[in-house]
Length: 83
Image 1 (cartoon, rainbow, N blue to C red):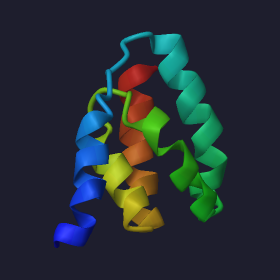
Image 2: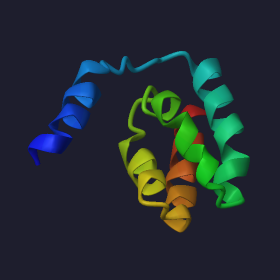
Image 3: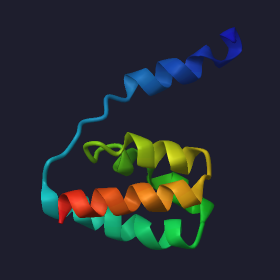
Image 4: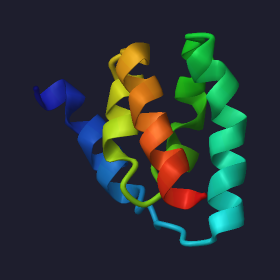
């Protein structure tokens, strides 16, 4: 555990600021949607951006777990909320 504690420190050091700019949020969603629909693990690279979207925790967690079926459902919820 001690060997991995630096990961937690690094994560906590990254203060993720939520954004409320609807256009920016929709741009992020549009960029990530094809990756999620194609079950592309590269969507993990957008995690910092995804986490800036308010109420995106379930979506981000699904991607982290490579649970793309659930990620699709969470993506639909986010799209409905921000359209």
